[in-house]
Image 1 (tube, rainbow, N blue to C red):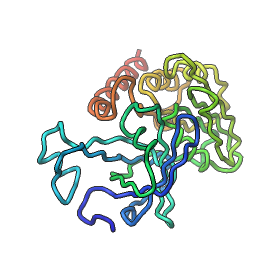
Image 2 (spheres, rainbow, N blue to C red):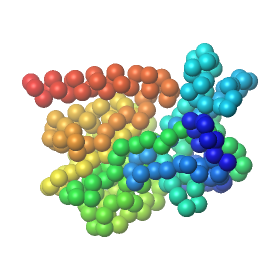
Image 3 (cartoon, rainbow, N blue to C red):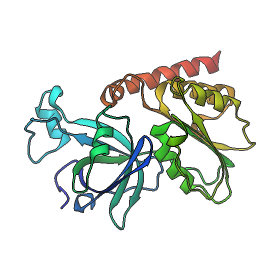
Length: 278
């Protein structure tokens, strides 16, 4: 049953599937998701809770109680993932994980997850869905943004123009994407290049259709910053028509990135404002 006084949902692994060379899909279910709900966004995200081994946590368990009563070094670790799909009738939550061997925390968990395994989940949050009144849509990201891009493509109105650029390691990392939109999808292969380098170049070279664009650009913070300046300053896209954020940052884990992300965003905004004013 759902934990009535907890700050989390409890999901039980129903099934898993490797959907590409580096991506594993995990479908969660169970009564612990009875109170989980989304609100029509395509970038809904959750925080997955990974307790530290060997630590006795306050009961009933809650992340808030842990942070109020325990030293930081034994706080449960949180990892942020986009909701690929939520079925409110079957109470099944689908999450896609990028997996690179034993690197990281959530990826290896997903690679070894089996039916019956449990995972605590916070959320969901989110803030974007494609505007049905936009003349066209721009969707850009790396593997971390792929679940949200796929969900956004499925939500686009029939026949609406879309330009989609997704950077992955290589051809074996492509996924079949479903949409009723008039979507031009380009897979940008990273190869041995730095993350985002080829993606930024591809966006810079893109011929933009005329009309009002609603853009979604997410992924590694470094290339997101470059693309934000390009789209705002060179392409003239208003900020309210642009959903853009660094999902992760090269060289930092999720917790470290969350601690500095607010200040990083403020710095980017200040640089952008100064450039516009000059």
